Image (tube, rainbow, N blue to C red; front, side):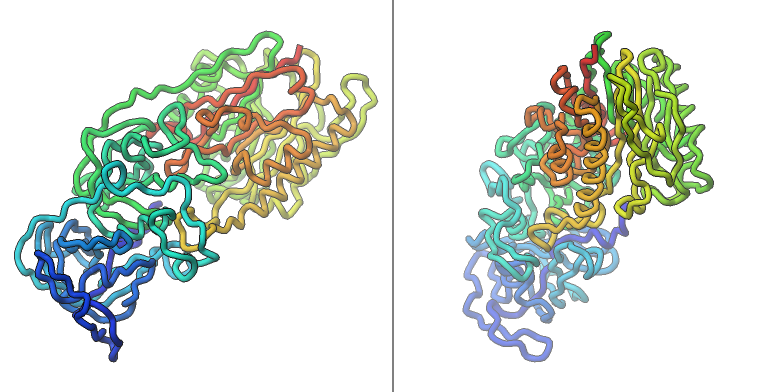
Length: 619
């Protein structure tokens, strides 16, 4: 659920003053020297909005009462409004606009020229314990209407205006960006947007780098992405290790009498995006003041090639909290992708299968969920599939409350044989032994079996599941995973720079456990055919994935060209979270790998993850 609307208030609120520069603070009122009063066509001789904003994240007048701060209303929200000085100076580092928090629907409207008295405050969306930046604003305001005036022209972000930094969010802060580092809008993305806080801005020829999300937000690049890199082949922009793409910005509809259109990645709009620059939930946002209409970019879902008779196709797919009570349309859409877009692979490692009634609570049994998916595949014209999985301990594996998500395997019964054995349970760890059988030396004590389910690294998280299959009479091991989420990490545009990512610690431990299990198999049989699959919730350049590749596995997404290397889009950044890694024997035998873009780029989709598929040569 989207947090309460009050938390999405603009970042642009600024305080009010009676003079131009701070000389002293007497009681709760600021005494100003008139030295910086501007001689301009506005005729404003009292404190200017830019004096309140200052060239920093926290107002130099924070906590002060100010008066007669003048400007023109540019946009109105449900609990406040933005206004802007119509006579800016030449200093790009200081914003010319503020948000005025009224706590109720304001009576002003765009074009009103006003004078405001109030208290300068720094409001932090979500509370003081969050990593969000603050919004400078005026609170407890008294407002005098002076007349009407033309709304100030929007500042262009992009070609012909101010170009945002293309790779750096912040490179000089040491902890809290609000109190450390230098304020450098020319090179630091976080300072660039802060210097425009609350101002009316315009983005020309915006292109969507991700679909409209559930909150109506649309990530875009200006100028059709001319000042951005690296772009995906389908219109997005790729997250890279040293480039979080600060040129992205979110369009939102809080100040709009209406809603944003549903768009896909690569879509355009009939007009420029115009609005006030806001901040909430870890992101700068352009709160639209003019409605947008979509121009369909014609994006279609990808389809991969079918395997040959000597190839085993293995897929990983996160089905996003799938339970038997979900609409049949979701099952049908997933089934159509498996049958058509993925050419009915031999093995599908699934993540986020829920129990039969999902978040309603009850037992962890998921037989109805699996059956509904298999029946949908059959109805879509697909081959017969069976499944293997292990029910978790009720409430022990994290995810949506009461949903009991888990990993599991779908497999084609005409292509693959699941090796008979003792079916594992939720708490017993699978063991590996040497069978002594030539060509099939590795035996599992449980099939399927969970890998170290009692390890604290998997508390409130999904346990890895290993399954042994035969394809063309050859043994194949698949380890399905769904590592710990990134919940609790700092946002890219948060107050702490560089962002801290405490969730990585758990994923690194989880990855090492899987790597150690992999090595147990290869110690017995160096030529074992092993696939590590799943939503690892981390990037191809992460430490967690590095632990798996250090054990000898090849990460197949990392082999793709930049423009095709993604399985997920978050806040407009195309990125890899889903992985297939294979052992040296499979690399040597030959393979084809495809990231099949069927979900992440689309506003309407059965899941937010793209499937990854490998066609492995096993003659």
